[in-house]
Length: 142
Image 1 (cartoon, rainbow, N blue to C red):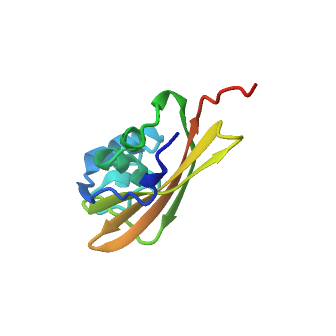
Image 2 (spheres, rainbow, N blue to C red):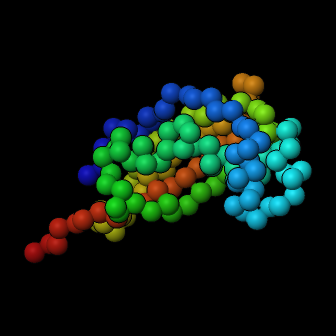
């Protein structure tokens, strides 16, 4: 059983610098070849912020906190709401909150919803909502 007392848990904020080298690697991975895409001051690709989570408090670290075995975990859904652009050279403050934990299929599936807040210069830049699915072992009823 996943510890529901962790609903509302928020990670302490961490600041991560967005450097051109990391954005270049990301752009190459998604097939972007124009060097202007990773020039200083350029707005980030919309999904790059997800890559910064590992620098802060990864989903694997959150699952460890919740005592969820990683072998049964799937990334079920991701939504990103952008409120302001983030640019190469910015420092991004990241904090993550466990907002929901709920079961389906008589406890065979547990869904964990995590919001990630990204801020630049003290202003919210984006919010990501991630749903993580944990497949649980459920004892067969007699």
